[in-house]
Structures are given as structure tokens and as C-alpha cells.
Amino acid sequence: MSVSAPPVAPHELIWGITTSVVSARALHLVATLRVADHIDAEAVGAGELASLCGVDAGALDRVLRLLVTQGIFARQGGAYVHTDASRLLRSDHPMSMSGYARMMGLPVFWASFAHMDHSLRTGAPSINLVDPGGVWAYLQSHPDDAGVFREAMVAKAQADIAAILGGYDFGAFPTIADIGGGRGHLLEALLEANPSARGVLFDLPGVIGALDPAPQRLTRTAGDFFADPLPRADAYILMEVLHDWGDAEASKILGAVHEAAPAGSTLLIIENVLGDVATDPRGHILDIIMLTFTGGRERTVDQFDILLKEAGFRRGSVIETSGPMRIVETVAV
Image 1 (cartoon, rainbow, N blue to C red):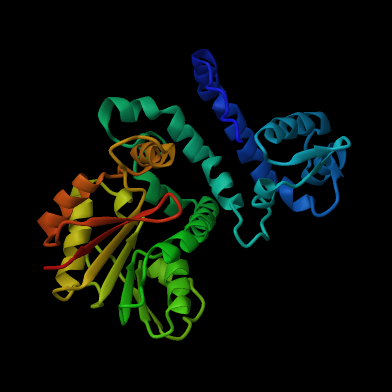
Image 2 (cartoon, helix red, strand yellow):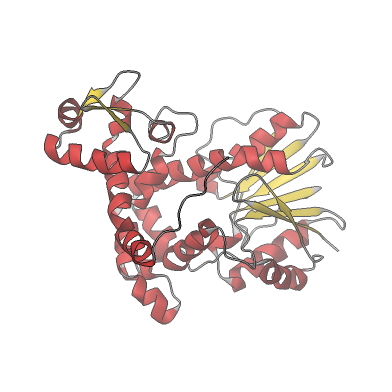
């Protein structure tokens, strides 16, 4: 018979949340140093890792000891080996989360969190205090950080794809358009799982222009969904697009989709749709990240329905997946 863990004492709960920034910062730095890349099948001592990474051995040992308590790396005979979690910090892992950890440790993101009181007072993203142009302007003018950001978005998408494909049957749609789909990882996986479908990837010219030649059954279209017409399709995907924007901009995006969409076509919004009961913190954490960095937000079903109705879509129904993502399915009328 399993025994449930004892409840955390209130003062320990407060202490844990207050100091969680220490573990987070340790993870950011270890990912940036690519410590995990220097550990393979054999245990590696802190001294050797420090020499390879160009840092102090004693300090690195202390940082790694902390991460061990979180299940990231394991200590073996005074050296370090991988756990399932720390393997995800290797840059060559097919499901690598290294980029995501590095992104959250970028100075611009760290500084934005330090100014989160600005967002709390005004409702505006605190990154504007770091770069008045906002997160997109900052990334455009800082290509190295933009590269880390793209790597992070790919990592997050790869982690979510299996749950999305397992949670929804895309086989009914001859043509599927992924709007703002980035490098197209979801759409390519979707087409591989549905050999009769064709796909259209729509994103900004700078994104589309940087991609390798498209695989069969995939067309790429460059444009701006705030200014350019969207492609016609039987189904449209908006995966973590609307949460980047406030309601006014999200309404414009939905309006652009509706203008292009044939009557009866399906729209699938894939995001951390917030529930009525706050049992899972992931969506709410992402909601605060959006508040701080983009001015966007995670939304409830009712909040989506208001936007959908204004844009000419039916009331959405929510489909669960095995991961944190949920799918809001609606139809153009």
C-alpha cells in the first residue's frame, strides 16, 4: 500500500517558495555552462567539470549538490552522473530542455523579473523597463539571445508534441494551416502521423526564410498575421500564439483566421488553458511570464469564448491532453 507524502508545514511552504529562485538560478547557470554535455555514461568529478567549464571547482560542486537534491544529477562516489532530468540538459538530447533553461537565465529575462513590481502596478510588461520596444524588439536587436530563445521554443514544442498528437485526431482534415508555427515542428510531426494530409506553415519572413527546404506535403508561406492574408485550409492551429498578446491583438489574429477560413472549418487553439480550480501551477506560472515579458496572458475557456464569438467562431470545447496543453476546438460560422 502506497503512503502519501506528509503535508508541507506552512512555514516550510513559504520558505521553499521564497528560496526557489536559488535552485532556478543554479539550473540556469549549469545549463549555460553546458555541464551536462561533459557527463556521459561515467561519473565525472567536480574538479574535471570545473576545468572543462572554466569555473571554480568548489563552487561548482556546491551548485551541483543543490541540484542533486532537486533530482537533477546524482552524486556517486564524490562525482556526478546523470538522472533522467539532467540528461535533458545535454544539447544533443532529442528532447533537450537546455535551451529553455538557458533562456530563463538570460540577463534580459532575469532583469524583467526583478522589475515585476512594474507589471503588478501597471499591468504592462516589465521588460519595457529593460527595452522600451518590448521583448520582440529586444530579440531582434540581440541575435545571440534570439538564438537561445528559438532553441527554447523548439525544446518546449518538442516536449508537447507527443501529448498533442495523442490527444486529438487530425486525420479528418485534408489541409492544416499552422499559423505562427515557428519552425514547423508540430506541423511536420502531424503530417508524418497523417500521410494523407497537407500542411501550410505561416510565419514571419525572417522565420520562414531561415528554414531548410520543406518536406513533401508542406508549403511555407511568409507573412504577418496582423497585415497579410492567411491561407485557406480545412483546419487552423494556433499553438501558444494568442497567449503572447493582449485581448485586442488576440482578437485581430482570430479575425484574420476567420476571414481566411471557409465556413465550417475548424480552429484549434493549443495553450495552457486555465481551469476554474488552480490545481496545476504550470499555466499560472506561464501566465505571469506572459504578464512580465509580452503583455499577453493565459486565458480561461470563458475568456477564449468571448474572443471567439467576437471573431465569428462558435463556442469552444476543451480537449484534454496527457500534458499541460489543452486544445480549444471551435468552428468558423
